[in-house]
Image 1 (cartoon, rainbow, N blue to C red):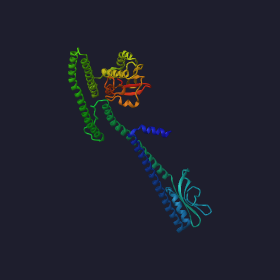
Image 2 (image 1 turned 90 degrees about the vertical axis):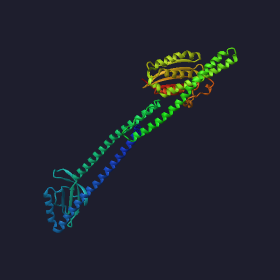
Image 3 (image 1 turned 180 degrees about the horizontal axis):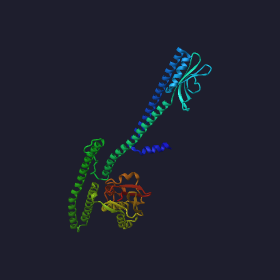
Image 4 (image 1 turned 120 degrees about the vertical axis):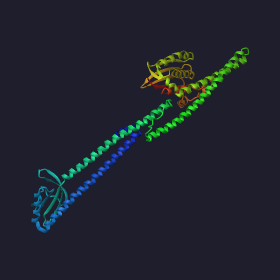
Length: 455
């Protein structure tokens, strides 16, 4: 359970947070390992120091006994105890267990090294490190050092290690949070710029400091150089397409006028008149195609965004839907609305209306008679969603990704009117409004929706 919660929290940190968390955990573990090593080595050195001190004192007292006898040893112990400042304690027990010297108040310890409990001058129980040796006459001499100073030193070391560990941990977390915020702030600026460019605003650039030259500034300058180049290429391509379409419209319009005059002159010849009328229809279709291409190029350029105003999407959709109810009814289909009141966006009324018209004409044109078509407008959190739903045959999900491509037409619609640009224009309108066009299965039928930020 805790592993799942920890894994979920770790994933929410993001890549930057996980890297920072890894280093915090690594240095925390390293600090703990270093502190534990220092503690163990220091404790061992302190114990060896105490043992050396006891060993030297015991050797001296044994030497006193060997050179000057028991009486001299007892006098030596008494003088040491009388000084009162000696940290060492002594206990001399005779062969029959009688007390011979020393003021260490404890039960006779075992032979060799041991840790004992004794009663100190304040009549409290304390711990001591002790060494007991047997003298040649069978007496037992114990030399001990109180461990309280050593314990206090250990506790001081532990407190210092914990303080250093806590300071490092708090400092690491605080530094990590600041580092994450700084990196995310810089990345957020880049992400916002990319989102604006995706939405069609090719003028956006990643901010870069003119004086600073860190990794983010160098990356920003590189991205801006790439964007400038891409923008220039796109503008050139768009300009060439627009120029071709624009330049061909004029001769086509003149050709159409001449053909219309020719059609009027051929009223007496039904065969030629019919052929000229067909040619006029083809010319009109070509002009419509150029007009659609120029319109899409204009929308995709994003230049119309400067004219965007608050728009009542509910009223606009309701007006368009009502105007198409009769068209749908004449085609054998039904059109209804489910529109929330007062859903507003920032946009262009003509563009949004054209997008909805394209969706309705597609629904009417590509569904069988008897199909029910529904226009919806609703608010989802901070998004306004305009949708057209039908219960027709629908479109396979594998084809959704190609529906908005230019000149994409289904096999059944190739013989009908149109150039396969309607949904491409709808997608361009959605994009320039900061939204997107999406397809969903209506089961049966198809849902085409545009979501845009609410005003």
